[in-house]
Amino acid sequence: MTTEAANDFGRAVPQRPGKRQRLAAFCSAVGVLPGLTSLRRILRKDLRILAYHRVLNISDPDAFAFDLNEVSASPEQFRQQMELVKRHYDPVSFRELIAAIEGGQPLPPRPLIVTFDDGYDDNYHIAFPILRELGLSAMFFVSTGHIDSGMPYAYDWLVHMLCRTRATRLKVAELAFDKALPATLAGRRELGKELLFHLKGLDAATQAAIIARLGDDWGMPPARHPQCRPMTWDQLREMRAAGMEVGSHGVDHNILAKLSPAAMAAEVRQSMRTLERELGPPIEVLSYPVGGPDSYNEQVIEAAREAGFRMACNYVTGVNRLPVPAHYELQRLSVESEMDIDWFAAMTSLPEVFAHPKRVRAG
Ligand SMILES: [Zn+2]
Image (cartoon, rainbow, N blue to C red; front, side, top):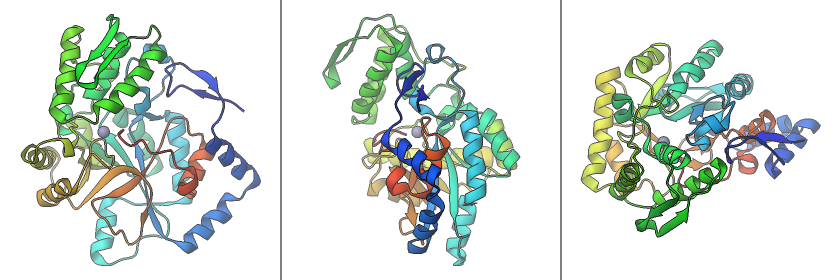
């Protein structure tokens, strides 16, 4: 069996299924998952939180000049996944989770929360109607500065510039990068992945300076773009009125641990204030931008608590044992576009075996 892999390399090419996918297909064929899942439930009780970014149909990767790694699922995949969630889990909202914890009430036996990071407008146009139709709720973590401005996300714009620039070399002195730009879009996406990984290790100001400088050098300053558009406040208001939840993903999607303590605390507070002003209280949950272990620390957690956030999600792969011990370090299961439904089912059932490898600096 082969699958079309359009996520990593920018071009839909037949790719051999990976080990996790083959094992998931085998488990599905022999029907062992339900038994193993029941056994696991007897041994431990967990809260699962799924993490999505974009839900989008990429019919022609060559015509899509943004980061394909941000696409978590096609609309068809997302619908199938949500139908499975509805059948096999007890979807809950953060509001219900917080109320259960505070009231000392037990959660339903198979609790699961669906989350989205960043705030892309496909969340509104594609994911929201599917969720509403199925009677499900989800949490949308948005970067308020992007909702305000309508401007693309900086990392995505960087990938866009790499895909489209006419320059022949990529020079980033801060990272000792001086590389020829590949001729193919696939090669450029690979280079973008490498650049983003190293860039996310730098402080926030240096990251912003590098992206701005490349924009100047290549004559590609950030601009609104239909393929990389944040949602609007009106869309978020409509989603909230229909039972969706909205939380903070910072203001400018800065990695909070890489800001000065004052700037970090201000960003956390301001995102809360803006969300409450635009949408009304309560705003109770934060998702740390990027979300890997080096993107937040004790100071960030303290700032979140002080700003009034009751819980926070990171982007570290895992499930949360109940009762939840670490309210500001909720782990998630990242959904990726290469996951077929067997893999998704296996990943949600037995995450220790089937979860996607950690994307330490992504998110
Ligand atoms: Zn993000």
